[in-house]
Length: 353
Image (cartoon, rainbow, N blue to C red):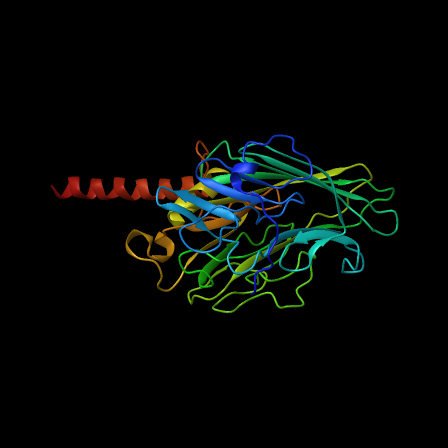
């Protein structure tokens, strides 16, 4: 997809600027680098990477240079929020996705940043029937792992009537170096109760619940379910959440995680450490790069992912449990069965002797 060029400031002009209203920012914790627009979506700034665009989306920072994941080809990453009535949101929604639809019905209340944090507050405009929505995206490094950024998403009903069903979308097209436009993707977390839609089509707009372009890009991907593709292609991920009714003045809060690691196991370990309930992971496919920068699939050189917490699910079984978490009773049962078997084997050997 063709790139939609946008004005940009250099990272030097952005990093470390605190409280600079109505501006974008490039932020980093030293392992993850992100370009944040004032409306709360990604892909902004100008920082060279190992290969490809200088625009900053979601990156893994290494000694060899940055690996980018969302900015090459098209700046297809965004979010949307809306009021669902009669099965759809109609025009009662707002969101931002630079490459697909741009900024829709959003008014920036404030944008503040430091070298490592960014906070966007926006109002959704033009809603009907007394509805009002304010959305805050608060980006900051995870206190648990350097491989993730934590984004606290708070949605507040600022209208004069209750919202019957609050819906939210996050969508991204994966373009992972060194094989931009050729990735494999995993989506996991079904059946989280607030998750109502997902797929591998990263070219959708920010409009929640709208899958008019189809929900998948093939290769073993499924709509609204868990999967992992095996044939590389230009893929992405989207997630639609339904949070139900929201009273006047009430808030709904959940957490999004953005991150990367040199391997899939490293990324899953980070997502497990924070208790992610739903996630997508993506890695390069095919051939590309040379030496240590060559594509090695799940073994890097860079694997990227998004996770969600507070969306009515439990951490998928493939994620390692957070440190200090006691295993479930079923795990204890399996351990007891194994120990009993070992004890019986030892008794038999002693009798034989």
